[in-house]
Length: 392
Image (tube, rainbow, N blue to C red; front, side, top):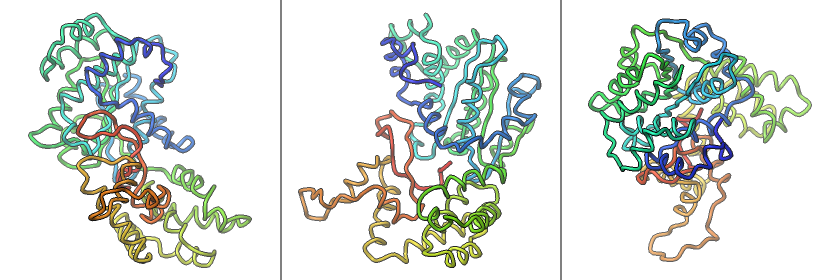
C-alpha cells in the first residue's frame, strides 16, 4: 500500500510529474475505502475460482466482469482486491496494480483521457519516473487521448503483469459511448494486462462483457453478520443488548435476513433500530423492517419528517445543500453554509452545528466520505458529506 513514506515520494520531480499528469488520486480513494472493510469480509471473492484463475493468468479471458446490485459492497470489495494484489507474491514477477474508482458526483471530470492520465500517474507513483515520462514532462508535451494510449502501452510493456481494477463503471458518463470507449482502450493496453470491472448489473454494460468471465457480487450472510456486529459494539444498540445475548442474536438474524445481501440495507436497518427506546420497541421494530432498499429509504424519510420542526427543517437544508451544490461540499463547508442567514452579512459562529448532530438528524441518509481529490471543479480533497447511496 502506498504511503507518504514510500521512497519514491521523496523524489520531488516524480511528485511534480504526478501532479502534472492529473490531480485525480484513485490511490487515495482505494486507501480510504479499504478502511471501511470489516474483518475479512470479501474473502469469499478472493477465494473464488473465477478470481484466482483471472489473477493467476490461467484463463484465456483477460477480463473478469463482476456485476452486483446496489449496496452490496462493490467499492469496498474493489479496494480489498487491490490490497490483496499488492501483498507479496511468491512468484518472481514484475507486477503493476492500477485502479479506477468512478463516482457519479464527478461526471465532468470523468473522461477517458483523465482516466488514462491517472493510470500513467499511478505507474509513476508505484515505480518512479521512466526516461520517457520524464522527457514528456521536461518538454511539456501535450497529452491527448491517442498519444496517451500509445504512451501507456509502451510504459506497461516492461511489466510481466498489469492488473487494472475498475469500480463502478455504471457511474462513468455514458454519453457518446464513453463507457464502451473506456473498456475498449483498457483492453488494448497489452496482452500482459488483466482487467477486472465492477458495476451494477445493467444490460447495456453487461453486453460489453458477453464473452468474458463473470462473477456475481452479493454479500454473504457471514459478511453481513460481521458488519452488523461492528454496529452492535458501540452506541445506543450496545446498551440495549448489554447482558442479553438473546436480543443480540435476534438482531443478527433479523437484520441479516432482511438485508438480503446488501450492506447498505443492513446499515439503514441498524440506523432505524438505533432509534428505539427500549427492548420492546426494538423487538417490534425488528418485525417491521422493510424488505427492500426503496422501502428503507421511505422509512428513513418518514423518520426525518417525524422529528421536531427545527430538526426536520435543518435536515431538509442539509439535503438541499448536498443535492444542489455545484460540487461535493467538505464537512466544514456544509457546516458554514448552514450558518448563513438571509439579509445577515456576518456569520454567527454560535450557530455552527456539530457534524455528528447533522448526521443524526439525517437518520443515516447522509454519511461522511472521501473525495478522489484534485480537479478545480470538484474540490475539496478529503472528507465530504454525501448521500448514503454510494456507501460501501
